[in-house]
Image 1 (cartoon, rainbow, N blue to C red):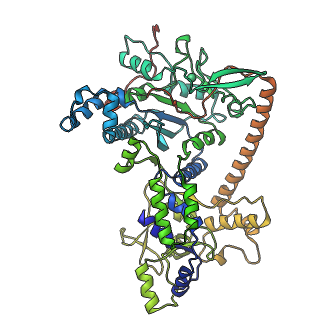
Image 2 (cartoon, helix red, strand yellow):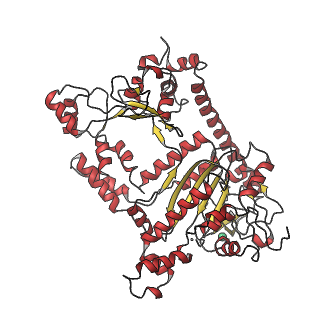
Image 3 (cartoon, rainbow, N blue to C red):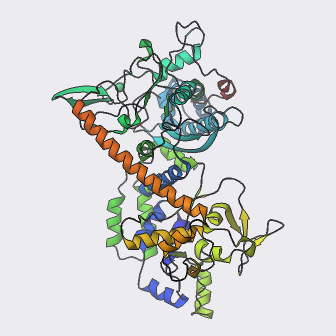
Length: 593
Ligand SMILES: [Zn+2]
């Protein structure tokens, strides 16, 4: 936290700034505090800004990687885990009197730290050994992922996970049969035979059977009459085979405000109308409620609804704190620090969540790192100051020296790339290179004028994020948009290299796009995505109107929130090896196959 405050205070705007000028600005309390607060708080676990940043990261992943395939939720049911309950009893035996008479709920409340460790180990194991297994990945090879841990009202943890599966079918691109086949392979709602699969059968009855309660029942108005419906769509319809719906029907929000229609329905017998879709191996490993939803739609709207929910922020009273900080007359640094402290103190968290935070457990994981490209011209780009000691030294020895900033990726490092990287674009350099103080390779890529080196990454590149500009809004925006494109994709050493002589940024783009296919591809990708989204929005609105008029749909519903909040939920078994080999096709009750 102190590091973040320090970093914030060291980030200032302006290229030419001498040590003396900086000193004057500081004395005048010219803090760019408002815009910096976001960056600062984004590092604070659980803050509103933390999740907004996470939401933006997911949006960039969707943009770069295309639609994810699956949305998975694994809940926890610590009260039902005998090994965990036994473990808590054993490790606390000497310090807690009468421990043998305590109920599982009391034991879990007694030791939230162990409950939290258990949940994390279990999820890590499921993710690493089952979902992302090298040899037998449960849903197919995972090319990318994003997961986030969240806490229910009563404090129990669950995890939401987005998976991009290599070569998985995508609705609107693959055939109906391909999607159907994939759905049948990775998910089921089968009621297992209790004699041939006793364990799975028990787990399904215990954790996957939905019982409607006041939480899931919502009132809807239809033809002037009110009626109640389960927002998770139970009981779900009986189907002879797995059926896909028209994605537009799922996206169209009806004026009657009924829950969304489901994207598909699995093959389901009358016995199974209250069983929530699951994957047998995942359920066996998780030993608590699981939910597996296929969301592979080429459009960006479906994942958008899901990720919007995934990255929702938690309750906090930060807004009032904002008021406090601005009404105060303390110094910038003191203000920032006290704001952070208040912010931390004001968070309301359950015991398990508190344990998690204290233990420093990961609250999310993503397969890609993001790197922000500050594409602003030098005069408005944000820069990080050198440490205070170095600046004080300059103030004493050379107050008019401008060398008060740390090297900036776009303004300093890229233009100083070695000659052998002459044709490497800023986009490629930011995506694929790290900077290092030490020489680590035989053919070091030394930056011109710096005692620093570039190293090529061996794994996946960073996803490059940047300020988004809509070129349609004005001529200025259009120029700014193409300025960004040229800066990212056309190799340059100075800003003057960006434009062709006598031409503007847009004209230069038009003249140079054929020479720079990546730039053209990036631009055309943006255009196509926007057009597709606009078209989709029009279609959705149209469909919502049509459906409302016809009032045809009264059968099925969907839950926008994905997780089965309200359902009983989980614990750890090291049964991963067995799970992996578990046949995907569950033998149903009474089935002779
Ligand atoms: Zn219900």
